[in-house]
Amino acid sequence: MPDVAKMGGIGGPAKDAAKAYQSGRVGVMSRSGGMTTEISSTLTAAGLGVSTAISIGGDAIIGSTYAELMPLFEADEQTEAIVIYTEPGGRMEAQLGEWVADNDSRLPIVAFMAGRFMDSDEMKGMSFGHAGTIVEGEEDTATQKIARLEAAGIQVVERIDEIPGAVKSKFDEEVRA
Image 1 (cartoon, rainbow, N blue to C red):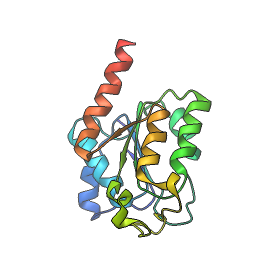
Image 2: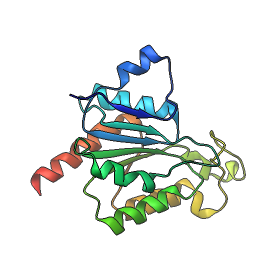
Image 3: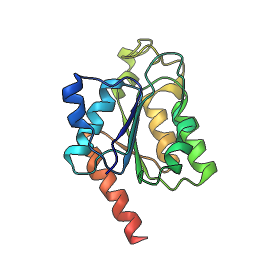
Image 4: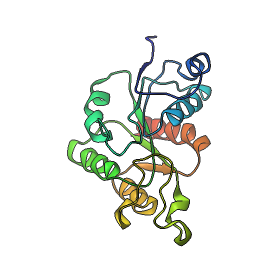
């Protein structure tokens, strides 16, 4: 099998991060370097592995978005599903949902939304994690982002350990179709 392509900053010492990235059939896009490694490790431990992992970062100015990267994953024959890690703040999830709908994507997508607690009244006006995670309005909240992703047919899981099962279910659905 070919090596896993990794782009962007990933988290952890190189010797440990290398264990997380075993070649497989799931692409990973993440707004966090550390979470790129965590999700890849979870997929690897479940026997799914990773085709390509891209950490787009969580800064206020992002070089690439999920939607801009989707054509690359679509063109990659090794990639059979996508997992994204996302957070409150920004509009990337809305763009991804539009891209999936407009382009009849062949790839099932599973998303993990961090920071759901940011929607509580006590957290309003606070920033979370990365510099880009500034909730500017109602449409930037975790709740609204989850609703948009699900409306686009993207499954959103509540915990990282649910990701492999969700991906495997997507593969099973394709076999039954």
